[in-house]
Length: 323
Image 1 (cartoon, one colour):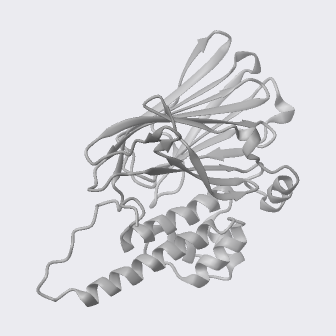
Image 2 (image 1 turned 180 degrees about the vertical axis):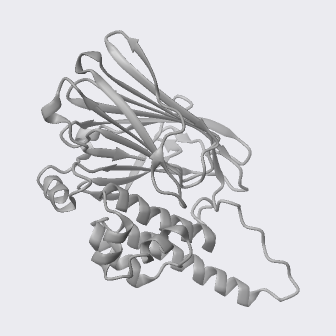
């Protein structure tokens, strides 16, 4: 098993809770409404997302179906169950006098020292460029890095959104995904491929050879892809899945569209609240550029920027998301 894949039971439980919260927010569904649709007590989802209740197969199955999460929640439950069984088996095999192994605090060997996202819009296409400075804090070389692309045209209306993507699915050709590391092209492999949801392994290798991220080393990676504005709409969410030291977001829109931007922050224990500081704004070569950043964001925090174009009032509909 790759060092970055092995997680503790505690981390797997937190990942499950974050996955449920993520899809609930994508669908624009309050906790009590989700609980009622799933047949649970109104407070049950809140307890699950806060970690007071442990994941169960029944809850995972119902949540995945109700939120149309494409098995993403179910996979998180399987990861939790695998970690739980592994821990139980290991505990039975270790003599009582032997001290327990100290797991990584976050269950991951990667620290993101700098995370910079830039979203450019030309009036019809969004181009997302991600730059991340990754450090390997583990004991084994890292050979791949997981990224996710997820869009939702109508987060408050899952049936309408699902119908839209069945008719207009995201395709690899239109995404035109590219990735580099130290100037080297990175190969990539699809892990999950669904109409509005992709997971991709970026590989630290290409036709010329391999260039793993060795313990103690740090490296910048960059990847980019394109989504039309009929599939990616007016919101952009970042979920902090790995320990991160600095996170920043830049949005660049045509000034002629008269864009306005605002944002919210959500954590594992708190509902969405306005960002502690408003995005900065500047004019640049016919573009209106908005920037926002934060230091040491909490693990599983989610930062969501939204916008509308006042020059296009008939098209101001929230549509998409990336993390």
